[in-house]
Image (cartoon, rainbow, N blue to C red):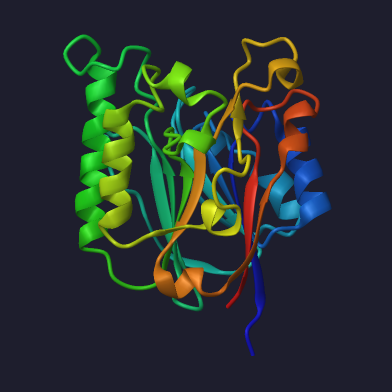
Amino acid sequence: MPLPLKIVSWNINSVRFRIEIVEKFLREMAPDVLCLQETKVIDQDFPTAAFRALGYRHIVLHGQKMHHGVAILSKVPLAEDDRLDWQANREARHVGVRLANGMRIENVYVPAGGDVPDRDANPKFGQKLDFLERMTRWSEALSGPTLLVGDLNIAPLEADVWNHKQLLGVVSHTPVEVAAMAQLKASNSWVDLGRHFFPEPARLHTWWSYRSADWTVNDRGRRLDHMWATADIAATATRHHVFEECRSWLKPSDHVPIMTEFQI
């Protein structure tokens, strides 16, 4: 008989600084698996005790001092973890695991890409495009049931940003990034679970800049956080959530958690 499984992805923007809201979220929503990005802590200093106290005893980390970092914390057993270097410079931007049911979870933090959408003028933008190219080559060779989650740092659709025309020249929504993401998505016929449950033009933002004193006033959001599934996993998905209210919590991340529920 299929069992329910709730999986969350959240760019937490420093797990130690925001541990209180992580604990609050886990107590309220009780996901089975939590995938974090931008943890900003080396593995030895990760606050594992707080997670174990809430039942997340299976912990796989890929940390880095002050920057980047990803982690998977789970109530269900994890195996076969790996850490791929799509940035090609040893930055901690990926961790993958396999669940007991054979499903893989790949947790990714794609580089933001700097402020100028030009490879020559801004090397960070070129690094982002190269990262996506390496991911695409990996995806082409991928086999088996897989869920790809994380901060992919691209809002691909017009409905994924607060103003499509104004953001066409802004990194995260430029045509070249959208095209790169489309190639990645096509490379394994990934199903975008967010848009599977909330087809455009439905509102589905997951990030709001800190630059606005009150993010709710102008509501200039973007959908940078994603969950993609291979077709076999997508067929088991039953619900998708975006927790906008977390953006107003004490000491919030600029990203909010997203969650998909499955019957696997």
